[in-house]
Length: 80
Image 1 (tube, rainbow, N blue to C red):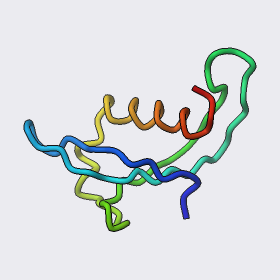
Image 2 (image 1 turned 120 degrees about the vertical axis):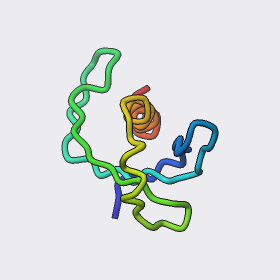
Image 3 (image 1 turned 120 degrees about the horizontal axis):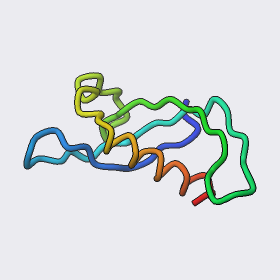
Image 4 (image 1 turned 90 degrees about the vertical axis):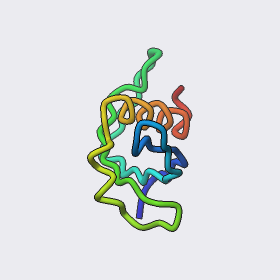
């Protein structure tokens, strides 16, 4: 099971977005007293809305998507 399930959209084509859920497993979280979320180590899977892992969508997991996952995870953890 995942620590967090984040509803998102993934860009699968130049003009096509698919709804997805990002299942995040947090391995380590050491909060800081500054404005960032401290040390955060995590892994995530991209799932469809039925909860099935979509390995075929991993190729669309670019830097922008990863930044969005990180941002949404910070919000879900209450650190943003």
